[in-house]
Image (cartoon, rainbow, N blue to C red):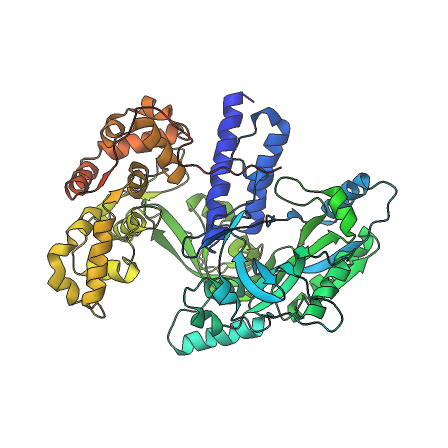
Length: 608
């Protein structure tokens, strides 16, 4: 394979993984399943093993995924909160054991087996037995200070007590915050009774609760904390094994997961895996596998770490959970860039702890591959126990009247022609901002935190403004102050809300060229690409004038993306919107020098 082709493949995988890391770790809204993510990760790892000299500096195989939110104070972890490697079958598990035992010749190895809880990892700091800080995992190096929220968790000790052991001067405990099944069911019942949105699964509910700025909301949620390890202890606790460490934590008042097993061989670990898998439905908490750790703490030190994970532990994941149901309808949704996505509406079915009624079918090619039809019986999997997907169609159960699904000729929202360029998998509405679906998504993207960061202009405002015909495109946002009386007439929008919105819009006018480019929502241009374009071209005028060849020379811009960028700036209605935005007062600092700085704005953490 040509070197340029390998690098391009690596870059594509790195960008995809970064996108999904952000969705999973930061937003707590995963967009692909664990197994799909693992496939991308292992694909990249395989390429890097084949071409070690081409490993990219920002490869996620050398760091932990995710990024801290800005809602809470950022805290740097003294001891990084690394992620775990994964194994998926007995062969992988035995290979993990071989690697461990090869590095520990002539030593007896015991394995500590624990449940892999499906929650959010956090770090707790105690000084002289008093809880002083709680921090989320974040990106593994930096997390968010959520002390006020963790103090509301009922089973989490705020002050440590022990009749048997001396309380350490400093103790950092790691563990998972989650919502037990019974608490989750009650919470959703309460939400439904109040006419409020229910949560998709216990993990989402726990994440949403833990990241509330108001600790009273977190206090009302049935959260629980389960400790799984010690990061620091002064003076040293003197314990020698993982198993003893967990028992020591229980003596101090911490709750640990309901099952731990000390195994004398990897074969015994496999037996425990099969046992836990059978017992899984009866557990009080959601799990997606088990964690296997070398028990001896000195052996853990001998084994050490890879760049993003310990050599002495791994997660042994369960296979996907599945259920049969029927496809009642297939609808087409229109996204921000006009992409048409087919969504199967299912007869609701309970899979892996949640009720699934909608599943994306991705594109018309996937519909043809599965040969799925309206009325079909299908197997729905929650792969990695997160994102449901249709894995199999059962043609033997197909009714005679089952309908074949065709790509619509016109947009289901605005009736513009649907186009699907040759060689592309995705069909798109050609209506642009004329299409209401694209318009609302374009506005949501434009005002988002990573773009123009207009705080307070949420979905409720946007939908109301669209109904009043005050937002035909994003440039209209900067003329909303001219309609103050109309804004005051919107239900539940008082003087203070309107003034806050106008102030936020005004504040957003001072931005950066990179943010502005990203906010435009150009197809294929994410945050990183927007930064590269800003660093390369330095001014909006230079970028608008760039041809495809010039764009292709920009780092992170491939041939297809270059064409999409050029097409965007050739469209007259886009130029009209740009001119109106600049005329409204959007501005950024002029470049100090016309030099390319592809690493400007990047933060680098070196580990090893």
